[in-house]
Image (tube, rainbow, N blue to C red):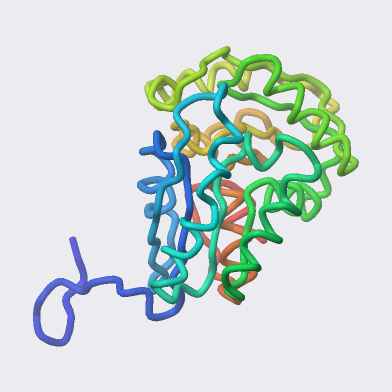
Length: 246
């Protein structure tokens, strides 16, 4: 049921508190509905796409970064988001490159997925984690190295070996629950399910209940940082401790 406006028409979310402008992979149809479900009142999401269909062409997503940035800046959004985990964790140098190139186009502040994840793990006090992904082993290895660069130790990791965004999106939420639970490690301080184009947000709360530890996903962690850095501190239920408690 939609709330009614003063005119009696359904209220429309025009982002009067904040407008988030997200650049995401062209094959990703999961991040937008997930993030829309997490948004607090008065915050709107606006997107543009950068070409990326599979892991083999991952860094190709950066080829038109300036164009995507300008398209978002034209809308005078309050915060820009570069939203792809595998690309932004490709190497420790990539976030700096993205930041410099965006700053050459606009002074709108920027959130990058990989930086949001590192910050979220820091807030949770999690230095020993379990990593679950849809990726191939080479991509997992890069993410493990990226996290190690930031002082985060991956105790156990698994990837499903899926290459395309459409195929990643087809994996059912129950599989993410089962696969992550199977990686349970008593030394883990948090569990991170990586990738912006998978249906993992559906099972965050259930996994936290089963594992007794915080569970992060790429969409959840990115939105948490984007909101907090924009000065929006609403506590959001249904998607894990991070959005609810921090």
